[in-house]
Image 1 (cartoon, rainbow, N blue to C red):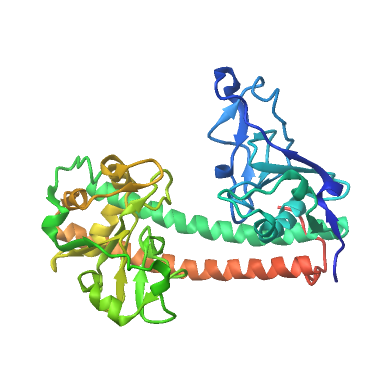
Image 2: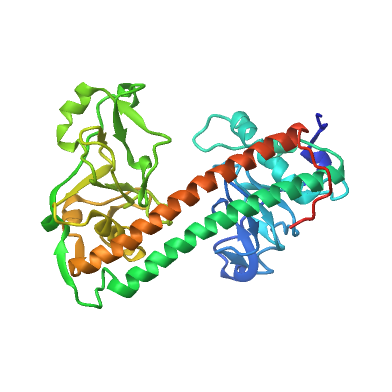
Length: 407
């Protein structure tokens, strides 16, 4: 069953945000949330009632105060990032918000329906350095509008699916907290070293530390199948993401033999930002592929440890929050692009507790990683199920026999 599509301008009031003057200190440090694209999300539902920056009553006099349940959509830069107001708030000018007429649109349904707009936003934005969708174009965009009862049921079904996803993510996060707490109990801060463990430089426990090479021609040298070629976007915190992996031919790989990977090599990103938890600089993961089956580009370091070193223990140290702050203190470059120099990497201080303690911790770590792996498989299934429900809902194919209570 197809639902009629109606323009956003006919379903509510669209408001473009504004930034209170930053040269007037009386506009800021108040109680009213000030939302920027950084506060929005690309997936799931993000209720917003707290932001890093807040404004005062004076700060909103020239702004546009949005009521609770307004749906926020980024239309400049990170197109399609979204949030839903969980309190009265204002946004900056990158965000268009819809105050839905609640006689026509159930706000939570409106939120889910607006998430359908991201591909179209990308399509209609002019090809400029910063992508922009003007308010007038945004207002003309359409969403499917079923009867109110159906809207509420669709929102309820998707809420239940999102809740299951959220709980699974929270369970994975709790396992991470458990391991971090155990590490802190056993070894303390790996940088300040309050337990006074012996400290060794990374170069003194390694047999090789180097960065890869970016082949001439860039993407033109990539092939459909061949030698796995890992770039910084493939190296995350304690995991390799191969969704966007590329390949090089054997000949190119041979020319770059020095950076050919071996089983259990540690990889660390060499360049990037370091302003958020998932920033690209200093992320580290372990390579578990076959020897000589992969290589790295110039934005990734290879760290090959000595045979008697426990790789998982060193990797955990390198990915602690304390080490992240240490990397922040030694990296060089501007705000947009920082870099870890090889000389700094070689001098990284690594605590060296008794081997039996390292083994004990690594056994716990291995057990937890196995549990997390199983949970991630379940999480992927839940996310796939959500996407299936989402597609069915807006195609009018979702069968709901009874009214579902809202979460």
